[in-house]
Amino acid sequence: MKSTPFGIYLRDKLIDLRFGGPKYFYGCSEAEIEELRIDQKVDFLPETYRQFLLEMGRSCGSFWRGSDLLYPDILHHKDDLDRDLEHFERAFRIPRDAFVFCSHQGYVFYYFHTSERDDDPPIYMFSDSLEEPVKINDHLSEFYEQSILEFRAIDVASKTLSGAETQDVSENTIQPNWNEYFRKEAQRDTSFFSQLSTNFRAILFKLGFRNQKR
Image (cartoon, rainbow, N blue to C red; front, top):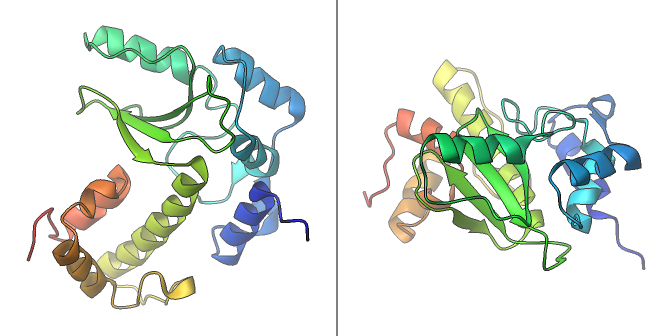
């Protein structure tokens, strides 16, 4: 049986989790995808990324709201990061085969390598607080899946901070008693917080959680 293309699977999951209705998800044309490839001077784009662009490259609801990962916003991302690295006199330079596919408010950048022509490549993050990039996911598909988990948790945390009622999230990944879930994770694995996005850690820090056992 033919499997569902990743882009359609991801779009449908985001719609099911109420990141937006179907009308808030629409993709890039093949010409726009080619424009992105040429802009960052690479010879290849992974199929997982192409699927994302085809289904939601222009609009993906509230997913990653506040960050730049859509066309045309991501045009010149690579040049912007290069310029910042030079301005702040960092030893690290973005690899020539890198494709910078996402950034958050100009200080966190996410990229993958293209020279190995991997259709679901590892993901690296660089921020203004780092001297060298760090690998955060083994695959781009995992990056998207983890982001869904984190942004759903941010939504729950934000509602809690505002005093609004919260609802359970799907698949029982995070329980309604989410603060107890985080405490248990921190006790079980001290690297738990280092695996979370910058956005998510900021929410947890505001709530008084820290990267330490309790």
